Image (tube, rainbow, N blue to C red; front, side, top):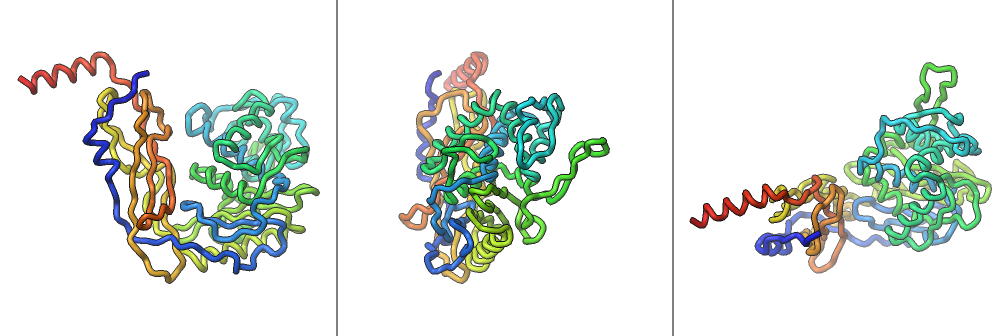
Length: 391
């Protein structure tokens, strides 16, 4: 494939472009906070900026139990976004998937269930059988799906996570950290529709049938803490009680992770305490929503000359409540080695949020729609149009 020719004048404009906004991200002194006392490790961060608000032993390797399914859900959501998986398609359940113990939705070998319902089974009821069934659908086998999970770990540049299964059932050399789980959760939350599942407190599968199954969310904070709409609990005897939670209030979304709490009460109390701390002390200033058009990419060899470049995620700045607000700028840097075709979702540039010379955050930019190479007919038509203009 030939390199795309970008008009130099467009590149000069794009590289130099700054967008003034008002807000300030200020470092927090999280060492003074005395939170998550009943947990072995914990972390609190703001989703859009990734800013760390509090941590306790956040890089300690521990068994994540069913919080493993956050990565399982992430890979499923990626496939849905790409269109290689559909919510209304049915998945046939294998004997292996049906044999999974622990938390389950009691799938039977040979049963067929939609991707939408299997997602409910994973996100609401933490179904191990549903997790394996979806892994087999996406990758052909759980083993191959686990390879994809660990590949994603490397893509996210996480150093302290390794998965052996899709469920979090006890296994040797299966570990993560509060920090790594928070980053995986941050990535999952780019797919905003995931909270349509993780926020549901109760639902039913096989409604009206003899084997109707009542789903009840394992994350009770979804019901009892305002704004909590996910994400995933976990428990094994080794891991003890774990929870990766997310909540949104006044436009600010935070992620709180607790690992190794002795009881569900301690786990939920620690998470609630961290959420209170975040919403009482901090606030965000929204710059762009996911999908907002940031700039336009002009490609002379593409079927469509002008193409919208959009934010791949929600972008904000963070500051402590009551702090003074300085001027913030955003800078767009486009890749120079782009080649056609460019698929929807491909990384084509970066939006850099800065406070003076200090970089506050960097977010990937993507194209709104797939960009195809121009056909011979299109190129010929453009050439003729240039000749006419020249004459």
